[in-house]
Image (cartoon, rainbow, N blue to C red):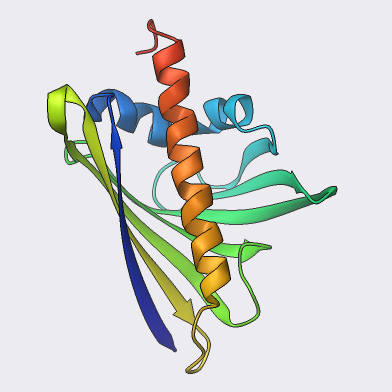
Length: 158
């Protein structure tokens, strides 16, 4: 199995604690409200903590599709969240799983910097398809900004 790593940083005007709560603990309720294509986020195994598997159902190209998202680790004190896409349409034939290591740190002017390390675990010595990697980055950034937008539009969010 090959492992290919990509890193990405995204900035936000929202403080890390508030953004972490929204992105990690409240995302199942927020995401379907702020991303039109995502219809549901449901727990299919576990209680929300490490080991939990979530099914994220969305519409793309007129088709209803899903990905399986597994929570690997949550550290509320360090604002760290690790998860993997383990099944569904988010995994091509050459990919075993895609792991994400996310961390929020203090950013400029009281905001945050989201630091993401993405690891594509491929089958054999296959390499990830660059177009899929770029699409994944774009979707991740858009999701981050959608959740940030929700917080900013709801000043009483805590």
